[in-house]
Amino acid sequence: MATTIRSSLSRRQVLKAAASVIAGSILASCGATPTPTLTPQPPTATTAPTKPPAPAAEPTKPPTPAPPPPTNTPAPAPTKAPVAGKVVIMHQRNELSEDEQAQFEKANPTIKMEFIQADTTRFFAMYAAGTPPDLLRTQAPAIPNYLARKMLKDLTPFFEVSTVLKPADLAPANNYYRANGPLEIGQGKYYGMCKDWSPDFTLFINKKIFADASVAVPDDTKSLTYDDIFVMAKKLTKMEGNRVIRWGYGYGDWWVDRIWMNMLAEKKQELFSDSFTKINLSANDNAKAVVKWYFDIAKENIVANPLNPSPTWNGEDFQKGTIAILQYGYWYSASAESDITKGNVMMLPAPTWAGVRRDPTMTATGMVMVAATKVPEAAWKVFEWYNGQEPAITRAKSGWGVPALKSLYNLMPNTTPYQKQVQKVLQGELALETPPLQFNPFIGESTVADTFAKYLQPALKGDIKFEEMLKKIEDEVNAAIKEGISRIG
Image 1 (cartoon, one colour):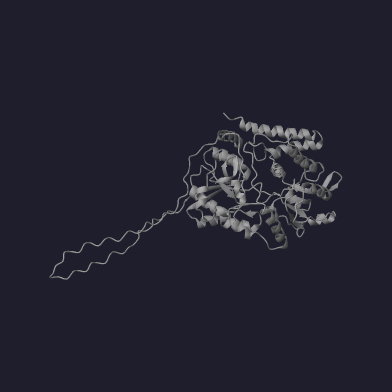
Image 2 (spheres, helix red, strand yellow):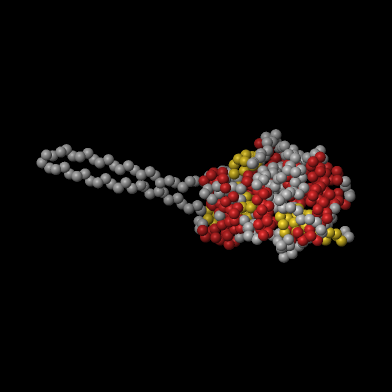
């Protein structure tokens, strides 16, 4: 079930404030582009002409037989010209290969695809110059900003006539790409879709580490609490003096605020005020407790932190056997097994903060079409192919994410004992149908996470107290929000 946010700010205010967040320069606006056309239908056959009246009877001559009526042949249907044009797509090569591009162009010879490696800075520069890519790889947290800038094309008319991407077949995570406005995400018009997605709060554990530390392996049919994880992960952590040999726990700290949002949602609370005008930390005891949990696990060296950082990233650390519990989504199942961890990896349901089961996606990587495109029909052909045809089928079989189309769910890997165990847990998470998180349109995607990291280090060193860290995070994030809103004329 989708949820929406209502704001006390006017639509005009939202559009102006968010404009200052995405880019410093004023981007060029472009006119509307045509919506998809339907294939012309053949005209109805004409009625057979009426026979001419018979000539006057002549007694001396028998009547002449009337000629047979002409054949009732329908007029030929007009031939629709094939969709044509050059489509510029900004994406990642590891997600859209040169071979796949060549296959598309061979099957669609009138469409040329120009590939540009994904680069946010370059995207905004191209948009400011009036030459943006037609299609863009993006993630859910960016959608409110793009909507506020009117940078996205409404794809609802395309979805309504598509035989490949049918609205009824779209997985629930695609609701991140539906909106009635920048502050009303979750329903309404379609502005894009996921390429794939994951319930992102699940856990992966290394059973061998559990055995070595004499810690019982959890039941994969029940959710742990975050307090359970803290106690368990502390026992699984291994130190040599001040050096960490093995962390008990790992998570994606670059999206920590999204994790906080989901934890608070269990108590029906929000990280930001209703209108997203400020972050609530110091005055919210529940928010304070959530941040304190993350501070404490860093202080105890249970997780990689500024004083004991990871040499790579948590995903690789798990593969090397130097993390016991890793909180990543289903997408990680495709790479969790390495030569070191193979046969010892197990997936667990998402933990709970307050006993309420939730497991949304918090990235929802996907694709949008820019409003400024001059080749919407050709761009849609590429969009439809990438998200619903051969590339989508290949992705579904890889296990790197839950397919964006429900009709492709049965293609997910389910052969080995490990894959079967992952699927068992995954199906329980999918059944939750957790609604989308609501992202702040006034700040960048990493503003909160970067600010937390900035002040976590001095707090861990004892240079500032926890309460001071909270206040500094709050002040800096609120200043960033205010900066966006301050540009309202």
